Length: 456
View 1 (cartoon, rainbow, N blue to C red):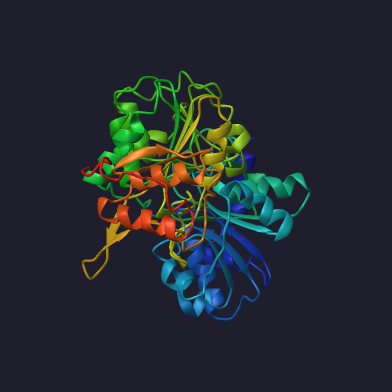
View 2 (cartoon, rainbow, N blue to C red):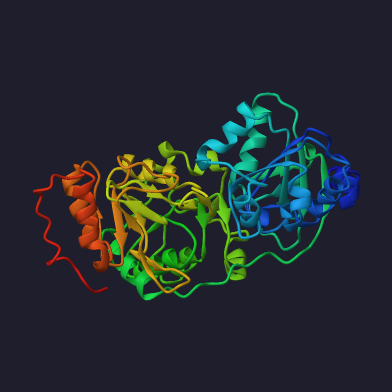
């Protein structure tokens, strides 16, 4: 049987140019996130687009770190490039409108692409085939794997292109393709993109310490990526029997594992397993997840399903936002209305944490920022001026370097008072004034800002 799979592998193994020629006019193509996007195959597809050999194609991409050619204006302008999570590569074109920023809740993407957009092509990076004919696409299962499975469940024909990379880890979970399911294979052993660790700032450490106070032993924790999640991870190393169910499996979990804090023993759903849909971080992290029975990667419509999240007792969702207002509305994917990143699974995990027994959802931001002229600005505004990612009635905890407050179910008087208390001290008086001027609160409402925390 092994020889049968090897023979089929050789029949389907093509060079990148030959594989790219199997893409047709009008195809709708799903590209996964970060290392999940095939690098060499997309160089070949980009050439076809640039040479006007492909027309009327639509792409949905998330956090493009691996296919820079399709972000070039001369190529992006020739396809309908929908960006679900803007990366540094795609941001300039997204802000000019050449790439189309597309608002998504991560959990909803597979259903949307299958039922509303009829996506018929998936491209993914995969580990080498095992003796049974299976490939692991676990670097980034995310929406693309889920799109494929949803289409096949509906009996819809789907072209699957795998770029096999010897450096890609093999990870347990539901993230595999069989050689019989694959349209074409390209071999390309490029080095995986490893993201540098960012040392947490004083603000990160302060925010993390406030959040950590609310996290009990045995909690199941969801973390994003960056300096703030790293800081939270460091603040949780003294906890016991933490679990992982997350959109991303990042280095902070590896730190917790090394410290003995991450055991997954107390998880009430899928115990003894760290579960995610994306693995992104250091080379050490990629080595850690490789053939590790304690780690599983699944499609995003499993990982970010609020009903699945809610099956974990004491679920702690911890995510960063860019701005909030006095009503609790949160912005996370834009700077004002200028596209910057994406919402990812934030809304899904906020909802799932609320439904979890003992669950909590934390949204964190710096209270202020300094512009290029050296002027200080508040990141808490009277009324949000941007695209709302998390509605005011869904927000539970808001945290800045000045504290962590609970706003779920509160009225505007309580919200204004609580949120002003975690604003930068230089802007608190202004925020109270604006709240009264805009009739967010009664002009006679007393908010004593003198007793609010003034130092980090």
